[in-house]
Length: 429
Image (tube, rainbow, N blue to C red; front, top):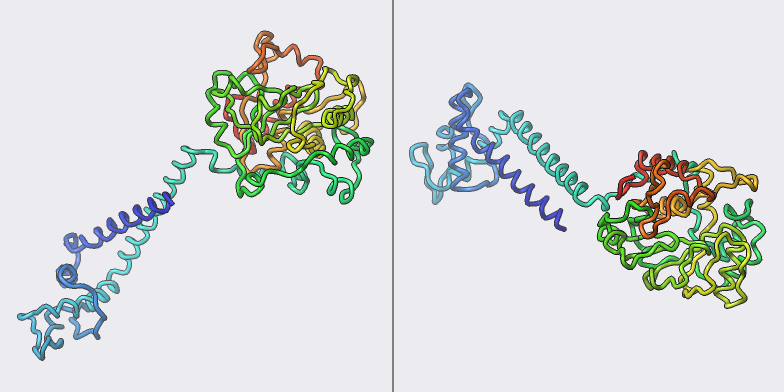
């Protein structure tokens, strides 16, 4: 409403300026015929005292094609039967003569009027363009990137038809069986997954589902967030996606306090998710192996905990509301590996590489959101052995040496997305 009001006021101002230019034409007609100037000058006087009425038939003309007001006056009857002459004009002469002279002036000055009108339209367009440019610079999150144009070039068969979370109805009875094992499919894990999906949910909150334009911020765990003062900006997004066990309390000024979704796997789960999330936060399990399903089922059903099969001991107590738990569709892990990192779906056991949760979250956001901004992504230079990689702990890049993640390969993928305009970086990369 504010933009419409400001645009209307600007339109009125520009129209007055344009009318003022036309109004001053008689004072600048030194190069025109004296007859034409006399008509314009008299017309300005008539318009100043009277107004516009219905036009009458035009009277006699002069040799130069112009009509002198004095020649028209005798033919016009005055009020109460009086005759109006050139020497005795009464108050009724102005309204009768003005439309006749206006029509004649328009016929003779059509080029000038069209020129002024074109100038007026250009001024209106430029004014609106300047306002739009200012709004884009002042509040960039209101303007989404052209995802529909750039997405296919990077993600290949780009589609939003795949559901975000697994559910019994769509996954087991409607869609074809999965072709891959975890983490790129669910082949061989159907039985445990069937039991797990029967106690979890898959829906999105109505407040997010009903949005016409979803503005999303994917918050990484990188050191770049420390002392960034990005917290207030991050909280303004419709959807805020966080990763693993990255804390919020104590870092609100830099990372914000809003969490819409938190992606995690058992080894990265916080034993009390309520301390670092909002009450309505969706806790999204990213399954990398069948043991992840078993851990989740044991936790939610309070069964005997599973200890083997993890590279790091997951929490044995995980105080979460099952209604807030979701199981991420492995399709997004497949797209991240195949389209962004060019990884084969079947790899030798000794050379296995997997996408990080951060790159997976960006891929998920590109399918789910209309606008995607990222913050806290990027690792230190490989030569910098002392720089910490997270904003909340002191571990260095050395801890990533034995992982199954190729961070340099992922950095290239993120830079490519930035170059294409798929995402925008809120922190430096």
